[in-house]
Image (cartoon, rainbow, N blue to C red):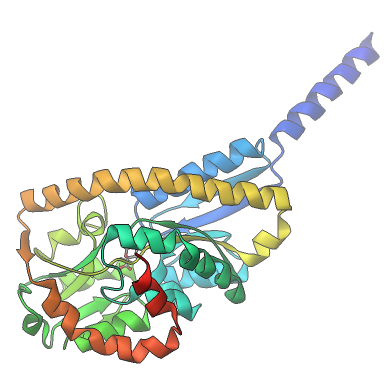
Length: 323
Ligand code: GCU
């Protein structure tokens, strides 16, 4: 009797431990705060993976830049030190040049055009191409449109940018864009922007409403002039390390890809809500929203197309041709 009880106990224990055995713990990095749509997207992805693998694969999400700034987390993903990262595609262009095409000003005619491109053949081609750089692209997230904001000098026309020190993402395309506008580019990690605005190290920066507003990194508190020039629409990207990817079975790779794709719907819904809320909140807090003629900004940035056109091969023309 005692032996039967021991055997039964051993069986239950074996079943239970196999049900909960974690074969793999993935670490995922994001530089936005915990309740931000991109982080919520990663958390959804984590739940999806855990459920679909019966807990064999668990993904821990580290928001708020805990694992490093974007440049450093991309490098760590390349090396397999971090498994998954969500970043803007701008700094990824320093690791895999073609994806920098999304950072070109006014490359997209609007939201619909951008989604057609990133969800179509070009977007997929760039996700796959990342493998050359030891990164596997899984999905794109929404990041709205980027606009300038400044501490003291309101930007009402291109001429107002002359000589202003404007923070840029760690991306050569963005840096060149600032020079084309006559501003002085100051490349900085995202986490350094708030204090740099506050202490006058820079005069301005550029981003979307959710990043600028109270649910993002709160730049509105120190830069009250927000200019609606809409110069760029740079999608976010979720990537996994090639070395982690190669360790997964084909079945688990499919689960991770599905999880990332499923999370795009969650991120997009949260994003839509937050974009309107953030705009209303910053207006309420006293930010001045400045309407400008975007065509003046667009005209000033055409030299970038001459410089980058050849570097991006036929990508620029193919993107512009997507109806
Ligand atoms: C967006 C993006 C961030 C990025 C930031 C930036 O807000 O969500 O991940 O770091 O742009 O300007 O650096």
